[in-house]
Length: 366
Image 1 (cartoon, rainbow, N blue to C red):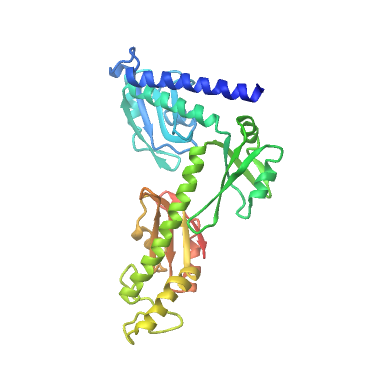
Image 2: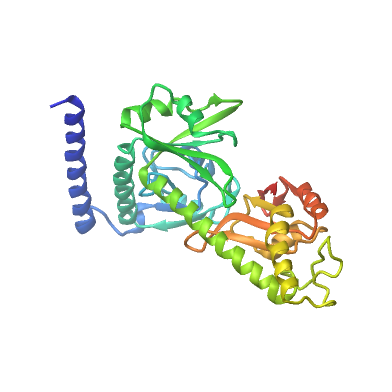
């Protein structure tokens, strides 16, 4: 029996034992746990993904944390990613109450929620998080961030030259328009190669420093699923939007009429389009204008609505706004915004890197 087979077998046994322990605690809980408030446990949620224990210590600098090394528990998702949740053990009820006053304050560019919970909830969350981390560690996957947009799979393979990557193990993430986002996933043949890959963090590929994080097969599957869902949603949107423009005779989202640069009567009511002309209008609006006069937005606050986007581009007026949502119907922080002319679209690009609420927004011209 080879060393690799023995190693895999031992990991399987450990996972089974840990799973049994996890199930036992889920059913019976910790008999020593108490529901009394003297536990002084607080839950913090809505944290930035990059939050560390030091960040939490600084955020609660006016409070006394019970052992800053072991008293802060950052929770991971089942895919091994930061969940934006942490549990913090305070030394006294006074410290706990003082910490709860930080509720709705900002950490970085996000406001966080802070409230008291029972120790039992914290212990359950920690066990689930630890179980997730074990599976993530064994997946042999990493995530890359900050890749040049021109980067190809061959470039990533060269970046990790000497490390064995599984067949079709490189996934380059694209946005709703099929353009690279600068993120990618790589699955290696074993955990050891993934561990070595993490040491490439902050190394250069072409002219850019690349960030390397541990990832999981679950995260890769989710990224692929989201890409397929977005592309399917956009296909439905194209058809729906073309039909809607045809029905309303060229009115935009805000009730105004759109002028066709090649036809001064476009959408103006006279002359009325005949059937064939209507199809021509639909083709122009659904293809030419969509390709030439569209600005793609990235980094929008999740609460942003169409009115916020319309005001963001003032004094330039969009003709149509489509906020992109994921498979669960939640905003992804992206939108496609259409303008009536190339000149308006170019003017709109002057808003690139401008702030909407507390976040700066990136713009890309189609």
